[in-house]
Each structure stands twice: as structure tokens, then as C-alpha cells.
Figure (cartoon, rainbow, N blue to C red):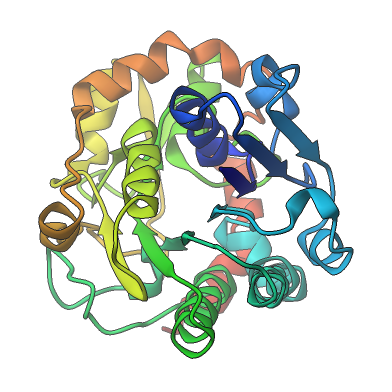
Length: 334
């Protein structure tokens, strides 16, 4: 079997590589594509010397236009490459369109010409729901992207589903909810709460809690998400969308309690839902996928790996206020 993983050096992608290494047979190949704009080579360092691993440090548009012989006729493709985070997407929407839309289109045009593809699995985002009307939120909820990151990930999903239907490319789109765990992003932009909190703990400064901390998130552990990608790839379903969530939701206050660290509060931000909570009946019923890692277990694993965040940016109320100015300006009217 030949596997292609785009974004394989990233947070979720590297955990998927770990899982694939337990599944492959002696003659299988895993081709990792990552331009390292946000991914980190150290995330997959332990696998790079393996003879079945091939690493391609290139932009998606470039690598698939080159028609590299090593990448021809893959059996499975996991498409996780893309840009995340809200603020930079508001400030640089063109970059997000290139990475999340043009990159996806280049992959799909490449796959149109290949033979024997068993499954393409796409990492979509639950941010496509915006602020939903119903909780838990089902897959047929209204689509309301509120910033370019959410919009471009949704556009990528629409391309996946359209090409799947029109060109017979067997595909599944997984809408991921609040993924957390070791190796979560530590890049320079203000983003995922676990990366922010871990760096603040290491710096021994208060955690910055948005609002009163009562907002809740469907925190889903990264190894469970990797498992969902594998099970989707092995299923007979195609042109389908599945939510991937923990089956529950947890307040930021409960996270702070588990971390047992002093905190301060910062203003609530426009365009953020008070709750995210996935309806996962579909994926549990059709793919037989169920998350295994409890919130308490997952938080402890992150704490045990806190050294990963030693070089992460340390955010304070003042630097967060400065970083999110464009966020408030763009979304306060919504």
C-alpha cells in the first residue's frame, strides 16, 4: 500500500504518522508532504530514518504539479495540510486561500489522474458551523463560516465532496472539534488554548481565561482523532461528512481547575460560540468510532509533555489585546 499524508509534520498529522507506523506492512510506503510553515520536523524525527518513510518538503501546489513518480497511484491519501488560526486568516486571507483552497484543488486534480485510490480523507473544521443553533451540533446544521480560516476550510471540503461525486474520487470529510494533545501548535500566532496555557505555566504567569471561563468546548484528544482518520480510510463510505468529537463538552473553568494554576480574565471575543459540542451519532454508528481518552486523562498527558512548549510564545493580556485587534474590528459587528 502507498499512503500519502499532507501536513504530516503538523500536530494531528504527526500523530497519524505514529498510528500508520503501527499499521503498515513490510512493502508499504508512507509519503509525508509538509512545507514546514507550521509543522515541525521534530514531530516525526523518530520515523525519518525508516526505509518505508519518504519526506517531501514542498508546497502542495508545487508537489502535485510536479507529478513526482514516488507519489503516483496512491492507495490512501490523508489531507491535513493547511493553515489554521483566526487572526492571521483575517489579516492574510490570500495565504489561507492558497493553502486551504488552492492546495486542496491541486491535490484533487492530481488524484483525478491516478488509479486505484481507495480513500481520500480530509481534515475539515467544525468552525464551518460558526455559532450554531443547536447542541450537540449535527452534520446537517447550517454552515456559517465567520472568518477566512473557517471559510477556506469549508471551501476545501466542498471541493472534496464535489470532486468525489463528479470524478469518482472516494472521499470522506471529517469535521474536527477542538483537538488537543501533545504537539499542539506552538507557532507565533495566538491560537489554541492548550498551547497558550502550557507556555504560561512554564513562564509561571497567570492563565488568560476569556470572559468568565464558562464557555465550553468539545475537547477531543489527538490520538482519538488519528484513529478516526484511520477508520474513515478503511470504511466503504464515500462522499460523506462526519463530525469528530469527544461526545461531551468541558468548560474552560474546568480545564483551569485540572491545570491547578492561577489565572486572570481577558475580554470575551466576538464571533466565538459559547459552546462547541459535536453530535457524533453518525460516526459512531457508521464507522464504529468511539473516543477512548477521557478529558482528565488527556489533560494529564499534555501536562506530562509540557516540555514541548518550552520555546512557545508566552502570551499576556497586553500582547493578546494587541494581537486580536483585527479580530475585534472584523467580527464585533457580527
